Each structure stands twice: as C-alpha cells, then as structure tokens.
Image (cartoon, rainbow, N blue to C red; front, side, top):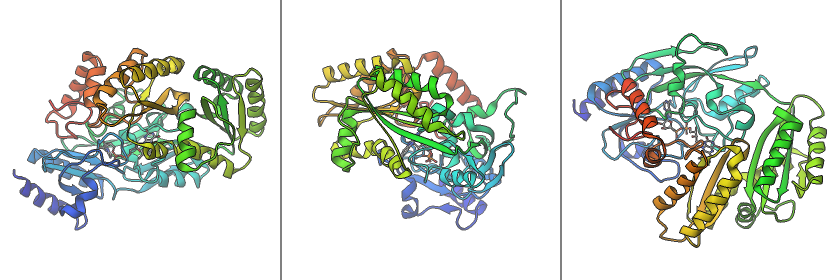
Length: 462
Ligand SMILES: Cc1cc2nc3c(=O)[nH]c(=O)nc-3n(C[C@H](O)[C@H](O)[C@H](O)COP(=O)(O)OP(=O)(O)OC[C@H]3O[C@@H](n4cnc5c(N)ncnc54)[C@H](O)[C@@H]3O)c2cc1C
C-alpha cells in the first residue's frame, strides 16, 4: 500500500481533528524537546480511544508503515521523534487524557495515557494522596511517556522509579490487539508480569493506552536543608547517617558540586545562603508524624559535630524551601548559559560515587584538556548528571566513550533515567554484553516481528 492510501484510510478512521497532514501542523511533532533530533512525519494521528489506537496500529501494520508513539515530547533521548523518511506515522495520545477513577482506600489512580503528569498529581492531591513521580517537566510529560521511559526524578530514593508505581496497564500491541491488564493489585503472581515489558521500553514493544498507578499518603510535614560537605565521601557518610536517623522519611538527597552552584550564582543571580564549599547536599525529609524537624535537626547536629558537614541551613518557610530547590533546579540552565556541554545521565552503585567521580574527572582532564566538570544529581539513588563544559571542537563521541567506560568499570549504567531513544543506541550496544542485547532482540522480535513500533530506538534496526 502506498502512503497516500494509508493517510486516506487513517482519515476515514478518525474524526476531523484526529489526523494532521499539513507541514505547519506537524512541526511540533518533527523535533525533540532540546532540538537535537528532527524528522519528517508522514502524518500525526490523534486517536480518542483505545479502539481508535488499535485501528490506527492495524492500518499501519497492513501498510507496513512504522509508528512513533508520542507523549509530551519532553524525553531527552529523541525517542518520540520520527526519522527523516517521511514514512513514519506519529501517534499522539494527547486526546486520551481522562482520569477515570481515584480509589482512596487502595490509594490508586486509573487514567488514560495522555493525561499530563501534573494534572494527575493535582487530582490525587485533592484526595490527600501523592503521585510521587516528580520531574521538572511534569507540566508537559504525559503518563504514557512517563511509563514508557520509566521516569525517575528527585523522589526515587523514597518512592522508587515509575515502574514501582505501576499496578496495571492496558496496551495495544504491534498487531493492533488490545491487552487489558488494568488490575489494581499489589499482589499478583498469576503468571508472567507482562506489563514490565512495556515499562521503560520507550514505545518499542507496544503502545500504552491506560494505567493504574499506586499513590501514597500525602505527607503533612516537610523539612528541606542545604548542607556544605567537604568531599563526596563525606556526603555518603551523611546519607548513611540520615538513613539511620530519619529512615524512610528521607525523600531527596541531591549532590551538587561547588562548581555547579558557582555557575548558578553567576548566571541565575541566585545567592547561596552560606560560604563556598567543594560539595553541597540538598536534603528533603517528609512525614505525616509530628517531630520531623526536631529529628532532622538532631541528626544535623551530629554530622556537624563530626565534621562531615561544615555548614547547614534549614528552610524556615515554604519560600525558603523553594529558594533552596531553585539552586538545584537552575543548574542545567546556568550550564547552558556558560557554553556548550556534553551531558551524561549515568548511575553507579551508591558506594562507588566518590571513586567514579575521581576516576572520571582525572580521565577527562587528561584526555580532553580544558574541559570543566559540572557534576550533580540524585546521589541518594546513585544517579549522577555528569556534564562536561568542553572547548570548541571537542569530539563528543570520544568523550562519551571515555566517560561510559569509566561508568561500566564502576558497575554502572550509561542511562540512569533518560532512556536510550535514538541518542544512545550505539553506546548501549558497546556497553551491554552481547548476551543482554541478544535477549532484548529476541523479545523485540517476538512482540514486534516486523519492527514497526519505534524502529531505530533503544535497539538498532535489524
Ligand atoms: C526539564 C526536564 C527535566 C526532566 N527531568 C527528568 C527527571 O528528573 N527524571 C526523568 O526520568 N526524566 C526527566 N526528564 C525527561 C522526561 O521528562 C521524561 O522522560 C518523561 O517521562 C517523558 O514523558 P513524555 O510524555 O514527554 O514522553 P515523550 O518524550 O513524548 O516520549 C518518550 C518516549 O516514550 C515513548 N512513548 C510516549 N508515549 C507513549 C505511549 N503512550 N506508549 C508507548 N510509548 C510511548 C516515545 O515514543 C518515546 O520513546 C526531564 C525532561 C525535561 C525537559
């Protein structure tokens, strides 16, 4: 079937707002959030129901045309961007955004894949419940994208990644079949837990159309503190002490280098509430039990006395909390104002963070003189954003290979939370064992034998 026939068929399947074919209308779907990747969609399908998704998938399969699922387009790996062939259909779930049900006893939310993450968070909050996947892009990211990327964020230390929130899923497979697994069960060992195949696989195995997510009680108290620490090893001691003193109330533990906050002070005009230090930790604890602040302050007194923390500021108001978080959340923007950078979203076992940083810093400075390191991240779960401000003309592939080799040598992952998309396919092939790649390819072949779902993403085109 030629592409014009497919477009006519899709137009007949969908309502008058359900198909975009004009270049201007399709422009937002032709490139990724950062403008690193661009492509040419054949058309953009905007179905209103799972049945319409299924019909679109069947029509594309019959025509042999590939589909690119599209959520809020905030992914940082080019996963939702089509290729340049002009033969790929972008499938946006934005018109399937309903919140179907909130169960206050089971603490669950049932929603369609096009629902914006922040809308779901706000709906849960109205019932005193927390949807604890939180990201700077939550005002745009959609549940289907969040599930398909297994998104992380700042609360993973306490609540886990998106995967640990997904109780039920409905998906449409590559042949257009609808598979309804919208169960609300915490315990379900009846056979394969097939929903895991569709979480974090970036739309390469199926289209997520609905989900049931586990919520948590909304904590009533929150304490936020900024700590100056002399070294990353001291930061780990503070993390351990915090876990022992305040346990699961520790919600976020963000590590930031002094260099990162110097960029923030210079470019964002945000003032540090204490003097310079090599490293800083932004810590947040939350609980519904009174006495949290006393517990945090007692623990801070101990680490200050031991010299593991050289200075500490505890926020006294919501405004001060926001000011402390603004320091952390402004790092990326400050970095982009400083100049071009090469970014790495990596993870290592928590105990390896100091050794990884030391080894990576010395390798980078040795091999690429003039490079400046801007390291920060969710240290409480081992995730470091290892960004490098490089001199003009630096070969980014060579830098990536060097950093990723150090990551692998420390037992880490070359993508902690941003996925693979089209950005890291080559590096994934290099850094994972042939047996792991072969296993993934067998799963892909079984679920999408004609490679019609997001080809070229995560795994190379076969
Ligand atoms: C400022 C900023 C901050 C961010 N912070 C974080 C962070 O802290 N932690 C983190 O993990 N990520 C972060 N991200 C990355 C991004 O927000 C997440 O990956 C998010 O989950 C992507 O959701 P989306 O709806 O925008 O997906 P998209 O970008 O639209 O798509 C992402 C991938 O999922 C696939 N997909 C989308 N919808 C579906 C569906 N319904 N079915 C099957 N496949 C689908 C796409 O094909 C693509 O491969 C950040 C991004 C930005 C811009």
